[in-house]
Every structure is written in C-alpha cells, then in structure tokens.
Amino acid sequence: MSATRPSTADKRRTFRTLHESGCFVIPNPWNIGSARYLEGLGFKALATTSSGHAHSVGRSDGDQSRDEVLAHFRELAAATDLPLNADFENGYAHEPDEVASNVTMCCLTGVAGLSIEDATGDDANPLYDFDLALARVKAARAAIDKTGGDVVFTARAEGFIRGRPDLDDVIKRLKAFADAGADCLYSPGIKTREQIEATVKAVAPKAINFLNSGAFGFTVSDLAGMGVRRISVGGTLARVAMDAFIKSAKAIATEGRFDSFAGVVTNAELNTFFDAHKKAGS
Image (cartoon, rainbow, N blue to C red; front, side):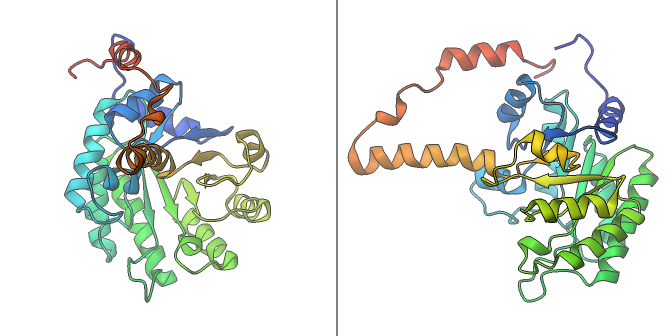
C-alpha cells in the first residue's frame, strides 16, 4: 500500500477512466476481508453485492434497510483503496424525488459508482412502467450531478431476472436510460452472445456491464471481444464461499467427517496476507 491513500475523488476519477475503454472485471466482495483480498489480487475496482452481504448477516436478499446498506457501503469504501460501486437496488424508494434523496445519501458514503434498478419489488408487477422507470433514472442522474462528485451511474433493466425476459423492452429501456445520462448500462440475466452484442450495440459508445454469475462459458477475452466494458459476478463469489462452508459443515454434522479441511488456506497464510495489506487506521 502506498503511504498516501487515494481520496474519494481519486477513486471516482479512476473508476470513470476504467469505463472509457477496454474491459475489466469488477468482483463483488461482501465484507472487508473479501474486499481486501480481492484488492490484493490486483483487481482494479470492486462492487458490493446485496445478496452476499445480506446472507453474511443472516438475512435474505432485499431484507435490509436503506440505512443498513448505506453503513455497509461506507465501511467497504473506507476499507479499500479501490473504487467501489454500490448495488443500491431500486434506490429504496418508488417515487423519483425519494430516489434522488437516497442517491444523494449514497454518494456521501464515499462510493465511486452506484446502480439503480427498474424493479419494483412487487412480484405481481415486477418492473416500473417505462415512463416512471425513466423518471427515476433522470432523478438519480440529477442527484449525482448536484453532489458535485463524479460518481459513475449505472442504470439497470431487470426484465430478464424478474420474469419479463423481453429483449426488445430491455433494449428500449437501456437506450432511454443511456440518453437520460446513465454512464453504464446493465441488464442482469442476459446470457447469449446475441443478447450481449445487441445490448452493447444499442447503447454504444457507453459501457455495458455483464453479469457473469453462471457457467456461461465466456472468458474475459470472449466478453471483451463482444464489446463488454465491465464484468461483474454479483453474489456468486459469496455463494461459492457459503457453499464450501455448508458442504463442510454438513459432512461433520451428518457423517462425522472432516475431510473437507484438507488443503485449505492456513491461518498463517491469511495472517501474512492481511498484515501485508493492512490499511492505515484499521
């Protein structure tokens, strides 16, 4: 770590530059330890995961309050020298003016970017109507501009993971969100080359984030070749960790076996890593 840690403004400038060309992976830590380990591996930016953090504190995804989530953003942003993108779900509000107020609070946590979804949280009506979804994006954009910070704004079209897998509608929304000032566009749940390339083309030259949370067979090089600028993994890394824990614990509980302990990272190795990546004031 350098003697002088980057400021929030430094992180935001770095994050914005990352979106201008090339392709980068933005993995999703769920606590300080996972964030610092990912930083130590050389990743250039990080993103929060609503599901990963919720599960780590014994809650279901979406079952945390706005203030709990903001506190988590503040903690992670302070813990790492990397830019942090905040998964701010639907802005914890329905109406545009309330979204704007909450986005302002999010910016003040020190994050370098944030995303807003067009999902309502209502299974019967899972997506905001187009006009309201667009108004919410415009409100978020205005709130970010008003803070004076260069926060990178990602707008999400959630149809493919909310039971509305209509590519034409997703592209219509992404294009409108791009025109309304979103810096990066994101449609979680798209999976095929055709879907990816169609969304990239629709919003070019703005950046597309691709959620690589399953075994789709695409490498970073593959996605870069399709024009994807940013690759995230959502809660998948957190689930990988939880999955290993569950399998190990079940083997102990049901079979009395400890075989899963073989070959795991040692306490000394972790101590050495975290000592080497200790942050000032932590």
